[in-house]
Length: 469
Image (cartoon, rainbow, N blue to C red; front, top):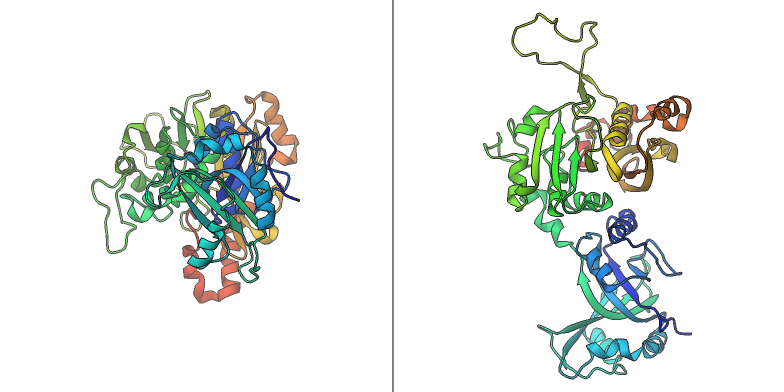
């Protein structure tokens, strides 16, 4: 029996990249939410599949998603699909003719592409599959270089490269609508960026974070651990005004040793602002400043539409804050000497996340999102390790595996209410809102896992495993 879309509905096929698999669905939901739409997949939805069938959308919704997504490759208006060529034919013949006709006119040009997932076809096999679609009423001329309309036959051969079937598990045919923004991963690669550091965030993940946060034009976005500003670059691309802070004076001011090979010192114009200038978004740069994330420096009230950050984990960058263990924490009132340079002390991961959530609860607008990375030791991970706050609701929790024993999880939270006095009591009374002390030993577990796997001599290679540690 053919599988087809009824005459009263229109379905769309989303072809997704098969990397960052865990991040794809939250990105799609966030981008549809910007349009006031909800994600409505088909009954046979499989999250790990490279093909998703979506219902209840307008073509304008799909175009909006594809103008931003870095997880999606292409989108199609789905005309038919089936498990076999016979089912596909039956499905296509039942598709409403009035929906096909505008794209099959005699004066128009077209071409048909064949795409296979997890299998490579010979050129002759592709031609035979196109010829087999002769039952479709194409009236126009074929134009391979500049067609008016592009159609695509897509075949899914499963996810196991070691067990590729002779025939596809599913076949789709549709009209191409738009491609995603995968090109941004190449054009914004940190390899080509003017100012980088040891922990500069990968371009693809930066754009994914901006999409999860629903960053849009005229938003004000803040990164409290800004580093070299990779996240500010991604957010400014979508028209948001960006600002950030960092405790590292040298990074904020772009001075000191360079992170590039064969370059000893940073140049005079290497800074975050120069990065935005490189991509033509300098007009969205508000400012960055040296500041301690554990200290209150902002006026009270909701200031930011989104807070997006990658806190230090203690691997590549140390987790430090200003302070002292001494009894006297500040100079006396009659002190008129030179400016005081504060000493630093350990800033535990559990405190970093508790401060971050508390800051977001007080300084995000209602509906604003907090997006941040949480490092975890995989053998011990459980949902209770994710920090919670009474004013913030967890939207998504996506894993990026770093090694056999470590990963980091991209946590997206949305502000649902303003802080109240009772929330302070909730932090004390409800264990769900208490900082998880197990985060503080992540660094030791990270290196102990490396040692067990590769021996003590391999510890020095641990810092090459991931970005942003």
